[in-house]
Length: 502
Image 1: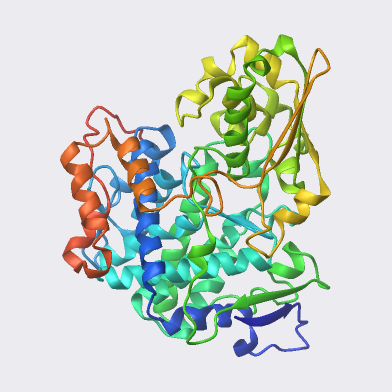
Image 2 (image 1 turned 180 degrees about the horizontal axis):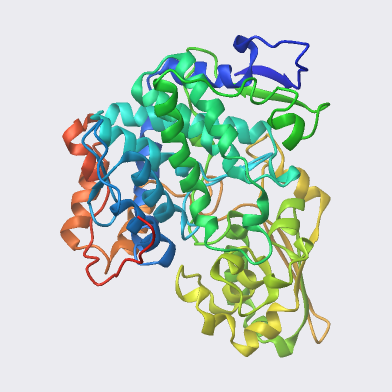
């Protein structure tokens, strides 16, 4: 990996494009390096994972809304169209990226990478696949495009914090998806450079979408970034230019959104011929909840099984989750969001409330993407009583481990201190989720397939489940005509579409 120092330059100090971060990102994308067998296998795993969570969300409001918008737009004249997940109908690629991106993101249940910034790099797949279908690319080209999307997003997330400055994490996704599409289409460094700059310029937004009463926009935000990435590449291919230098300019992203004019960053990117392996640093979710909650769900289930008395609020004095700065301030009591303790809060808000999640997992001994968020489940009296006794506290050691560059040290859990009314203290800890590569039950192909079968049962026909699994596992050898099979089709005739302008 090669370090690229990044800082702000005044207009009186011109920065040649060849030294700009967006250019370096474009060089990585334009190199189009062959993939390794290990990376290829993981891309297939993540495509199965995306299909799992999209399938489970097909009838949810945000997904139905986004799908109805996509259906309203016909195939554009430049290609054969892109399939909409769930219906198999064709639309223009940017609208397929939109509808399919919302479906993948709605349940907050697919892969993740956490470092200086956090991300869901699987969000790169819908726009890249949509463009591939529309333009007649092959499975091998899709594979390489996805590898680039993961590489760029994860490399940016390792180097540049967005949430520290209250910018939403999709500001790394716009550039990564544009870069991935650039690799897919075999575009020049110059064209990809312009597309990356445009995608970044138009996808920087505040973190209010993940604060307080969290709305349905949470699932739309990454889909919007994917849609914009498609449009940015299209615009760049037509010879149009974008703001430059987008990161380093005195009125650019770093100067006014990320740290100010004295900020310094160092972004590590692959050498020209170095394999792109960043996808192997990411990890998926066994549970439908914010990633920082994954390990805590596993710990809560273990604690509840060993100490059933801790499930009853009458027996509990207090529960303190000692954890990282990020977990404490984003999904914990350190966020100071009263909505995180409100039984009438939205699903999106409960998904970002570690106090709620820990309580339900402790009492139920399980976690379900649907049942665990039902209003009647959140409103259960004994749950509310116990929930309000759960707080978080930052532990410097767990903050250090959260940010550790050493994979063996990097952790997303903490330790729990549960005090019973009789004075007994129950103490336990967990570093990573059971499904994490270093966890008790790491996910491999069998687990990804099991997740897909579990979430697809009752939604997809048995034959459709088997058809998809056959096609996706042949990704590198797929022809252009077979790419449409990488989106599942269900009977959604009982699901009415809302209407709007389109």
